[in-house]
Length: 604
Image 1 (cartoon, rainbow, N blue to C red):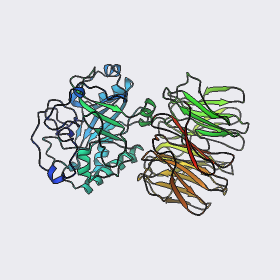
Image 2: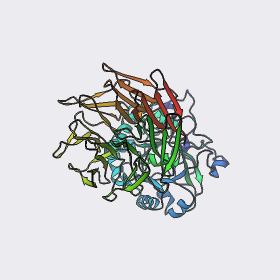
Image 3: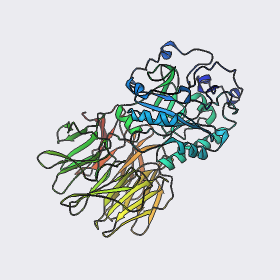
Image 4: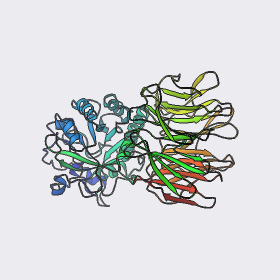
C-alpha cells in the first residue's frame, strides 16, 4: 500500500517485516531505523532490512497452489491500462482511496471504475494514521470516498495498518500508542465499516508490526487477513489469525498495463471463494424454511452453486450419493435455496448473475427453469417458505437496500417492494407461522435486527430490541408454540438469540463464548429443542442447542477445514443433517445418527 506523497515513500512494512525474536520488545522497535533507498511507490511488506528481494520473488513467480492473483495500486503507479491488467490474468485489485483525515487518492476513482469495467473484483483501502484522528472518523472519511457497493463485485473495505511511512511525522513504530489504545482504534474503525456496509474489514498487516503494536491481539480473527510477507510462504500469521485471505508475496511484479514494479498478491481459495469474499455466494445456502439442504421423503436433496456458476444437485437416494449439474447454461450469482411443496415438487431459487431471480423446479417428472418477472435489481440471496395454500413466498434484498417480495398466488408470479424504506444489509430469513402470517427477519446497515411481517392485512416493520452489534445474517424458525426463534452472529463473534415469546421480544447472548464466523443455521426438532450449527473461526463446525432446560455447545467431529456457511435439516428419525463447504471446495456432510456425529465428503 502507498502513502500520500508521490515523491517520498513511507517507511512501510518493508523495512522491518522479519520475524521478531521472542526477546524483542516494543522498546527495541522504538528507535527510527536509517532511511532506505525508496524507488517504488508501493507497499513492500516482506523485505528483510538491508537486503534485496530474492530473485524468484523479484521476478514475481506466483507461489505454487495459488493460481488466483491480483494487484494493489495507488497514485504511485500513475495511469493504468486495466484492460491489459485483466488480459494478463489478474482477477482482483485493491486501490488506495484515502489516508488519515485529509488525503484522497486522485487516481482512485479511475482505478476502481476501470478495474470493475474490465471484470476484476475491486476493493478500496485506507492507509491508517492512528495519530491523526480516531478510528470511527477515519472509517467515515474512507467510506465517504470508497464507493462501496453490495454488487457481488466489490471486495471488503480494507484497512492498511502498518509502520508509519518515512517523513510522515508519525511516531515510529506504533504511532505513539500503547497496545490497548491501538486495539481500541482498530475496533472503532472495523465497527464503523460493519455499521455502514454490513461487511467485515480486510486487514492488511504483518506479524512484525501487528504483534508488538497490538500486544498480540486476537480480537480481529473474524476479519479477513491480507498478510504481507516476501518469502516462499506467508510464515507465522499475526496473532489471532489461523488463515489468510490474501498474501502479498512480492513488490517486484511486472504486470502488463502497469508501469514499473507493482505489488502482487495471491488469493487463498477458489474462484467461488473469491465471489464469496466479494459479497457473492457460498456453496450452500444458509438455512431457512427453504434451505440448500431439504428432505424429499427420506432422501436428502442438496443444492449448491459451482465455481463455474452452474447449479449442482447432490442427493442421497437411500444407498448412495449422486451429483449432477442442472441447466449448464444457467449462470448463478447467489446461493441456491430449496423447499418441497405440498405436491412433493422440489422448488429451487437463486439469484442470477444478471440479478434476476431464477426458479428451477422438479415437477415429479422433469426439471424445469424460468426467470421470474419483475426484472433485475436484486442484490442478496433469497429466503423462501410456503404457506398453507401452497403458495411460494420469497423475499430478497434489492440493490437499493429495500426488501423485495416475490410470490406465487396459484396463477402467476408477482413482485412488490415492501414498506419501511431501505437501509437493509445482508440477506433476510423467512418463516410462516400458524396463522399463515409471513415473518421476515433481516439485518439493517446499523447492525440492528429488523422484523418485517404480513399480518393477514398489511405489511409492518419494526426494529427489534437489544440494540445493534449484529454482524451476520439471521436464521429463523418457528417452534410448536408459534414463537419466533432467530439466531445471528454478533460483531464479537458470539451467537445472539432473539425470540418472540408470545408477549414480547427478547435477546440474549448464548453461552460458549465467541470464536464464531459466518452465519448460523437453525432448525427445531420434534421435542421443540432448538438446534443451531455455525462455523467457528478455526474452521470447525460448532453445534449450539437448547435441550429444553439450558443452552449447550460442542465442536462437531471431523476437525476443521470448513469455509462456507452450513445448511441444516432434520430427517424422519429426528436426526440432524448438515452440509457445508470445505476450504478445498468439496461439500461436507456432517450428521447425527442417534449415537455419534459423523462426517463425509460428498461427490462433486
